Image (cartoon, rainbow, N blue to C red):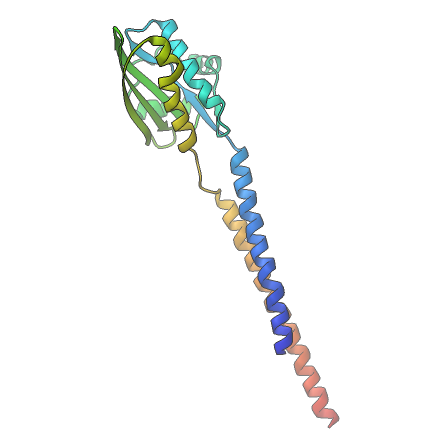
Length: 215
């Protein structure tokens, strides 16, 4: 291949290759942003609070997740129906990580939030856990000690933790097929470069042979 042609081919190849890789990864990031994870918030179990108060806390907690672009939060009615279909009428005793993860699978959720605790007077001890349904991995675990009015707990304390989970515990890895697409694009461009070089080399050899014969 002539030096001038080699340079032109290389100059054309590099930006096209880099642009193709960039497009693949940009598409991956875009798809991930649109692909929300299914999240199930299990019924709160805080001893000392009424069923109504537990439900109020849960609904306020869920609201922060519903505002997040990363999660598709299952509604209370959907969770109730799916558990009923599976014959699970009471899940208060389901507190271990494998059990919580199994509930996530029953609900077809990718992540599960489990909240339990105790209440006496104006003192609250609450544990919040986020569990990965596929492998029962504990992604988030925090214990809250709170003293104050129920309304303040409802309006602020739990909401801060919900926002923290929603903003930090999301899937960030690109799907494998975006990496595969990048490799295929790169391989195709390398093949094109090789084919161009082979064709050009053959033409140069023919031209050289013709020149020698003419002489």
